[in-house]
Picture 1 (cartoon, rainbow, N blue to C red):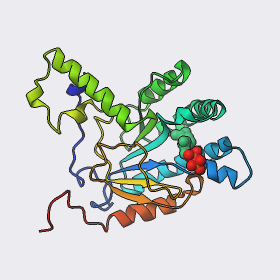
Picture 2: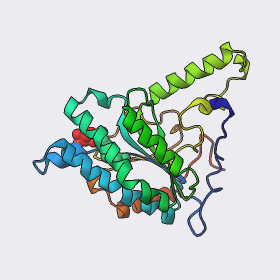
Picture 3: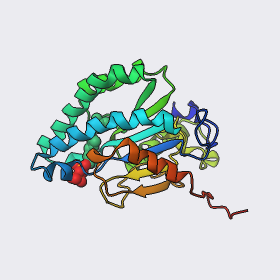
Picture 4: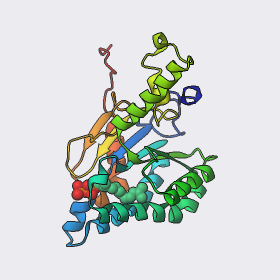
Length: 255
Ligand code: FPP
């Protein structure tokens, strides 16, 4: 099934909206970190920080078209986040349900196409139904492609992809000799997305924490001190513009 889906074009300049720099990042991925510390600094519970973080998402999504960012992928919940307290996990799940319910219409009307990546098996049925509904109601949109990583872990994604690839080999649909670097990405959750050009992590931690490991092989990284609930469209714009000044060689030598 996944092997037949199309992969977006990888030419970094190909999809840029008129008037935006062709050397800007077409796909930005963000590790939204620091909600807990932001809340603690205010003497409030961690979930207070997550709610503030959720409110930031809209501002950043809305900033994308003017910056020429066509694809935005955000890390909302990792496969490791289940290790948090039961209260925080259920609070986050309820926040995701509320976020989808409240934002769905605005996202649709603003031309945002929403996709979810990650493994749905541990998510509750109500949340899965809302995710399906939001994907379906925004499926015709093309202005910004927002991908929300929910119960996502890159190692888990690669393991699931490899399992499906092995099933295709076992069923005779795929020749092992044909498996190369073009093949595996067609089985990843991100198979219809271009690779991220820029990965941003907020809150001062310089780690990628199991996020888009395969896809970000040639991404540029920005680790910034700002806590996610304080991250503004202005700071986002500054990072996007700074990307335009970087020289990307993809392993080649400068001509
Ligand atoms: C990391 O901060 C953040 C999360 C695990 C959750 C991310 C969720 C949101 C930003 C809100 C919801 C998003 C959507 C799409 C509705 P942390 O808790 O690890 O912060 P800390 O490192 O300061 O403790």
